[in-house]
Length: 429
Ligand code: ATP
Image (cartoon, rainbow, N blue to C red; front, side, top):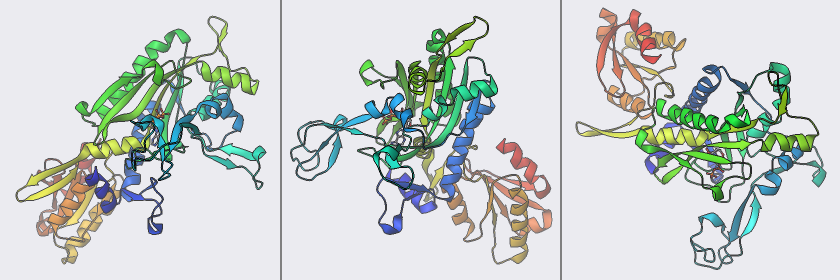
């Protein structure tokens, strides 16, 4: 884990937030490579769930919502963790994490009794800070889709089963954030609300568990590091009838990447009651009105990025050297191609390399780098997971060919410059 955290900082994937001020604890900024990786991950999710399916529509709801939403959803009453404070060192702990409920795990001091702590961030809307103006930062993206159920029915007229998909920020005032980006107070979720006839819910849940599990595998997570774990009845959230987590074997142990839950008709019924609007679905064929059940695959973007980084991290012996290589799936790699001049003091080579890079950039994410000797440049690209390095040398000036090196195998091929774009495009699709 330390090696991944260090690579993330060294190469510009993830930085501590507000670093020059000593950092804001457990808050992270994505740098130039991090934002590409994260965007690629979100794009892959959107493609698999919105573009490649016929039954899901995309959405992007606001972070701020009417406060009644969170009363209806149960978050005001139920979104609590129990916490205890140490009477000596004043540190705060999540009761669920404590082996001994009476003793501070850090200094051995006495703990207060466990008290509920609501995880929602509160703020004020408008210029006056008074209780009537209190609103919440959403703790999940789900409600933004659920409260739009009627708008979607009225504007797009989908038939059951259908779903809504959204990626966006969520905020939870976690008591014990940590493990790098695994648990933070500000994070991104990718969620689907899939509406089904109540009788179809069990099968839909199973189908979604399989579909979502395979998505992680298809993008390259190692099979032995991924597992499904279904929740015991005592673990279920207040709205859920059944839930299975997809877990990844992080360096700190098996932990949740995504939860897939059967939310039943809880949400639509609650929002009908609290809003006074009828959120039932009318089935044309049977002339029945009913509340659909909801199957919800809910994953974390940051946790997935972390899992893919940890999974892709490799150290390999190459002769007397160790190379660090991020073996990210081609769809996730932040940069696809790097163009490198073999001799940076030869203007004709530099010029040709820059021209090749410029031309590739129009269709392929390409960087140009001439800031070191070739061995160093290769290592640098390996560390950030660049799939192909294109090297321009003296001979390229004569035979109009370049050397293309593949990241994982390090095998090299000479390719004619006028075939290069086609060659790389074929490899990358
Ligand atoms: P946990 O048990 O780890 O707190 P959860 O079961 O409360 O998670 P859900 O409410 O199911 O999480 O949220 C769905 C997904 O959102 C999680 O699977 C996770 O990927 C992501 N997520 C939730 N809380 C956080 C957080 N504090 N930091 C980063 N990602 C989070």
